[in-house]
Length: 70
Image (cartoon, rainbow, N blue to C red; front, side, top):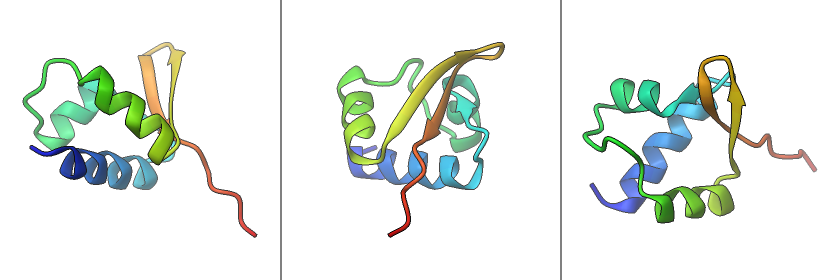
């Protein structure tokens, strides 16, 4: 899988699931084979799509920052 495919899959999933998902949930739902996500790719997602990772009772939950309407 290339980074662009990874980014698109994560962005589409998280925008359609506003409460977010853990990496384990994302990996399972999207059929990804990576045990852990590439740290470089995660850093790019934070910058490019506004990825946020926050701790919670389920573990680190991934969400995307809501875009401000203009």
